[in-house]
Length: 305
Image (cartoon, rainbow, N blue to C red):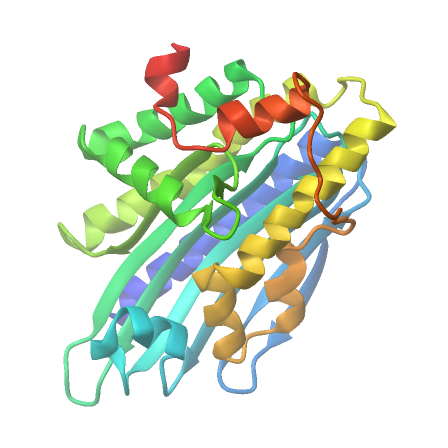
């Protein structure tokens, strides 16, 4: 198992490098600053943040590899059989907050967990996915996003994209608001069948599929003119991102409960955000259309093709 752990670790480090290189190229005005850190309970990571770029107001791409003697409560609540296990968790997680309201926010994550009780065989699984949060959605972009997701899933079976697309819709749903966080993508967890090699191959496909899914959208929308009112709406909708990450996201809970590095965990938060009491979009506006047409699960490929 140690050889497999190192194999995953090396892939994740290389993935962080390649994503950062691609995002720097897409931005064209700023570079990532790197911050290496150690965790007192075991493990560490390297956090990279691009701030105040030409396109990206803030982009964070984190690698972490942590381990400990006890699984956090957020993990054992989902899988009680892991109570009392030693664990290792490693992954790459990223969140991108663009300046231009016409460029969507996006998130991606790929991860690997191993849990083991003394004298027992290890329990391992992969997880991850990516999702898109537009403020002023364009059907062409959503079609490209989901077409890329489906294409990377197809080598693993016809049923894979619909299954993980639906899981994404369900997971990134703000129950207290009655709306999805955005237009979805892929989400998977607890993947250990049909074996290590194929499960790892799928995780790699998802990690490597993020840039081809996202970068063309950035290129198309980065120079779209916008108004101050549209910028204010973007900042208001960023509040939903904060609400989801702090209220519902299992990854945030796992990181905080496992004694992870708070600065790295919360780099997913936007640098600027606003809330407004009883906000209502103007009837017939582009802002109203976001609520009525996009913040709900839809079969995007069938409806937009």
